[in-house]
Length: 407
Image 1 (cartoon, helix red, strand yellow):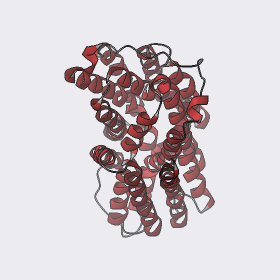
Image 2 (cartoon, rainbow, N blue to C red; image 1 turned 180 degrees about the vertical axis):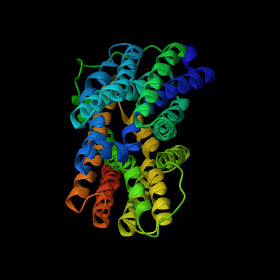
Image 3 (tube, rainbow, N blue to C red; image 1 turned 120 degrees about the horizontal axis):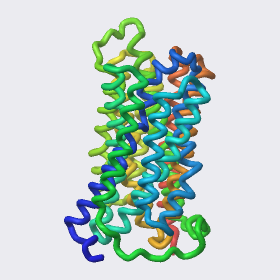
């Protein structure tokens, strides 16, 4: 359809699908936002809290190959709508039914499955409707809206928790996916789709696409750090603020984390624009280097002055997410349009498997080095987080060197 190539249609498509993503992400950070309260209520260890914080992404990883791969073969709107309904149910179930480690683990896992049917299938829907020069910017905006949803999740949770308590935060989170279902009705029609080459869930051509696989590895490193800081931001700042000499009048910590995440949205869009105009790999490597430096600074100042730690935590929320849009645009550009669903399924699988392992690894580091009330524990935690951007930079640098050697 020529309509899909028009400016108004591109704007509407980007707006609708970004709204769907943001609405489904309202439940993403509800648990990290209230982690100290839930941990105290259920007597959770740092490792158990890390598992609950990370299992959401394990659910995503388990389901993403099937759900995103299916978007090459069926109308992705049905996938997004059904997954949104599951996401609403998972949030409501946590509010009403969860009463300890195992029940929380099961419900959060289902929430991750639901997000797998919204995040990358939504990106496939976008690329089916927008082509040409507008596609790059639309992909950048859509991927950056992930930070908007993550920030909104923290903000909603912080405000609702302060007024109604932590269980009400999950009730509020369940409303967002229902709004996404209504928004889908406004989505413009798709252009004629290319038929996928090969059978359903055939990923061989994806794995042999070396430029694309470099982005897969880089995204995995990115999400290790992104979700590591998002899951543990509140717990770290809460502990730091309780230390002697750190009396500082702060708003609800989840609100601070949400605002910090929100600041990552324009930064991510700017980095994506720079990557389009300059050498993409070089821009991504430079961004990763800055994020690693912030992690190391946090490791060195753990347990120090709350103003310094707070500033660095906010900065890490921004720098860890800054290259997400640049990575997403690059992955779309080098993927085969006829197998884009399969390609993005692998991309998301790697990223959210790492997103599950990152928070869990941070929790283990804390337990091994003294727990959440230990300076050494938090030093180890931030060193663990820094491994993510280090790996992402290495993947992009190696890809860049490989491109130079290619004939």
